[in-house]
Figure 1 (cartoon, rainbow, N blue to C red):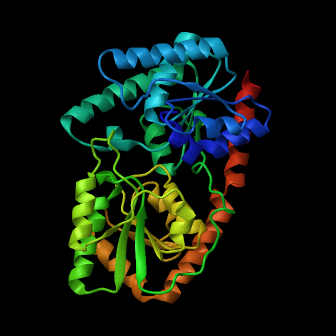
Figure 2: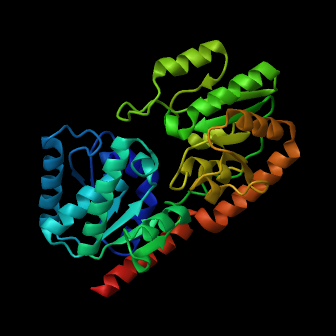
Figure 3: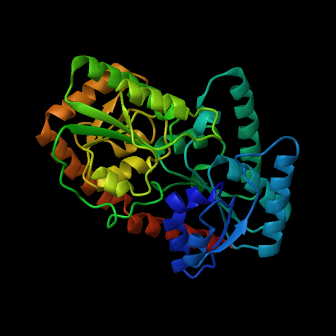
Length: 368
């Protein structure tokens, strides 16, 4: 796990599912502010160097050494790596430590597999070879959050189909995120997440400009902050400038996302690609319709015309049109929001995902 905040926001249900099976759960992650909360859950926390802020050449070696040492000391029955970078480093460490079985969840393909610059293509070739070798060496399993990512990895021969598993995300707390009546007043369309270019934030701003020019009765809100460790992050100056221009409202970072959806009518995510977008699932659980791009991950959550609307990638005009369509049609918003909540209960609730993950853990243990 890269960071403790990510474990706390996205992977807590998975760890609880393992704990409920009788496993002792050890969370190895870079520690910032959530160690005490994780410990209160009954998990043991082991600090490791940040895998997001490694300085060359010694950072990667230090991270690898820390993981090898950890795996040799703990002798885990199952190691569960989350996301691409932990899968790469953790997979190599598992081989060096001689551990029994490593499982990995690919939370999305990211820029390594989607960008097309020459530098990234070279990096992708290296990453693909390392993944293919390390996964074959330990006969590891991979969990994917959407069918497109699974098809890509099996089609490229990175993992054989019998060791590729589809489990849709990490679950949503459907009690904390519950259906809510729409707020009174002007329609609010909100994006919740990190302020990253690949999340489509610039497309939201472009759509907001068009809507402002049209005098459309809708407010566009951004909730979240910059990610200073990500080269694709927008800066706080950008956010404040757009707000000063009256293009969007920036509400900063929120620790109570459910409360946010009491104040908004529509969820936005014009992302370039996702694993499975939890921000949309939380909005859907609150009965909010969604507008997202027709890309892997997003289209696994949004059925256009049923739970929301899908728009083409990087098309601010189409995004503006979709926002205006739902802003003017309250009946359609409420119908789609109702359908979105029903889908979350059926496919994405914590209990549903936990049952699937527990079944996979049992399968892995049974092979030993």
